[in-house]
Length: 257
Image (cartoon, rainbow, N blue to C red; front, side, top):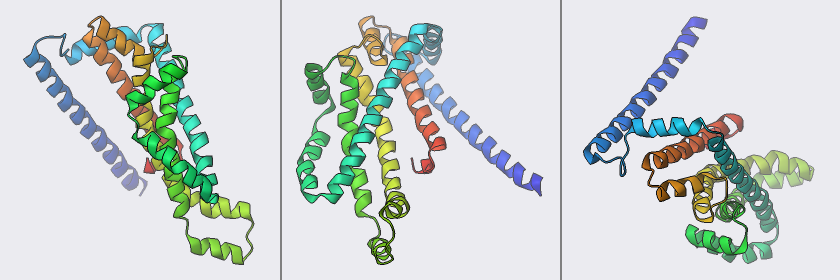
């Protein structure tokens, strides 16, 4: 019986791994063909040239230092967005005047182009904080609106029943409100994971803090080092996907990410 259960699971995992390997090989082949057609590494380096450049970068301490600082800014921006957006949504849900007050501000922030946010931040803050501010300004409205939407979707019948049976407020919040809101928060986190990396790296390109992946991207443009540009881009994509997959495993509701 045990073998009958384990073997299908192993076959399923093996099949999934083979599928992803084939997909990766397909796109590497497309990349290689494109590089051969262009036949100019300045415009389109081959996968081999990119991975050689990546290997050379990965062997240096500065490579990991730049990744560490960018990663710190992304996490800091997400934590600030989470820590401000969710409490604001709870207060706005309880206080209608606050929701009315915040509605135009949130709508305006969501409509502002990313580049405008970064340029404004360059005027107001130091270069190292500009990426964090840009991340917060993009992600905070997402956490706020998603949480507010989750609060509005809480089952009113359950709340009325809890009131009839005089259930304590902390139990109502823990057992009724929070489970209803969590899917919306996970959804916001899923969206913000992508936005945070894009906004932070874009802000680093313009603000050029000493240690950052964005500045390294800008430097490759100055020196026309396209293989290194591709290597940094590939690194950003891999780290972003790794963080997202890691959260799926760690968080109890990660399957919704």
